Image (cartoon, rainbow, N blue to C red; front, top):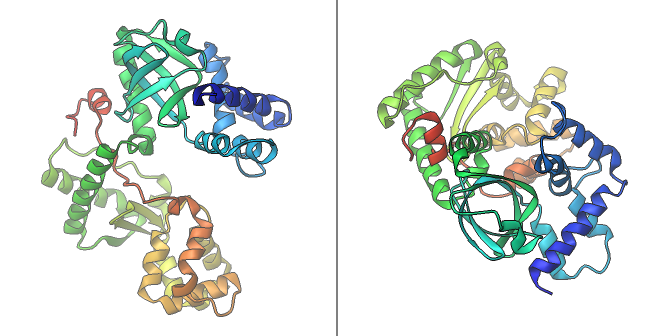
Amino acid sequence: MSMLARAVELKAELVHFATSGRFGRELGVVLDRFFADGPPADEAAAFLPVDFFVHQHELAGGGTVIDRFLAEVPALDRTDVELLTSWKTVVEGVYEVRAVDGAAALLFNLVDELVYRVFSNLGSAAFGELAPGMFVVGRLIPLGGDWLLSGTPAVHGPAALEPLTAVAAHLALANPAWVLRNPVLLAQARQTQREQRRCFVEYFGADLVVLPGADVAAMMRGYLAHQAARLGGPPPAEPDLPERLAEAETVALIFDEERGLGYYADFGRLERIFADPRLVVTREHRDLLTAYLRGDAVSPVPIERLAARDPGKAGEVFARLLKRDGFQWERSGELLLRTHKPGHYAGPPLPTVTPVTAAIARHLGLPAA
């Protein structure tokens, strides 16, 4: 059996497994969230939440539907397991049709500017209405070195170029990691981040600066103006900062070489903990340290920076927090961070800069990178 034929069978089994009733409550929550503004407009929109639930939704008990399927369905051979595991990767996008050749279509994704060779579970019939210059809005899952349509795509004619370019730009700006799938754009983003970091250090004198929360917006305006003057480009927009930062006693701006620029509220108090580990006994300081340690929401950078100043005191800080006598930062600190922030260690850190794709440039009236 070909990989495509087996993929079609597995996809049908996976959807049946997900919608058979055992996940009814959680699927209902996902459907309610997707349709909160009203019923679906078409077949593509109607099946979207089911496809999302099958491939990407994190179940209450941990893992995804695919993980449960792999664990519970017997007689899956190694090829099946590899294919199903790869389906945790879903590429969403706005695709321009470049060519159609029987059962395959070449689709150019306006979001990441990559070309995908795509098949469908319907065979060549799925692409009968497609022609170069048309657009497909949908989701793809891996099929070996190729891709398979996942769910029901929406098809648009060439006249939809302008509104679909805007859709692609919004997707790219809201999901920078999608853009960075493209290795060329990733390299551009890393280079831009290095240049921006140099401007940051020029302006502030270091890559870590601690400010009163009330001063952050004004200082960022000054830095962004300096960056625009050094690197070119349009005048800087007002910095988009969470309101809570202005209310914080102190905020650290850290422009890490790999993880980019981050804002960290109440960093001054966190510094005091690492200077005097005895402070961990107070609830105020313990809660702050716990908030910085647990979960992927906060980068590991602040803890890494403070621990590097004095690893011995860092070990004492976490020995007190975790009630683990003899905890040593140099021996166990990285493992601790990896345990509590797995998302930040799943692969090389991505830059926090979004490169200007053609879609973004066209939508915002900017020159493409």
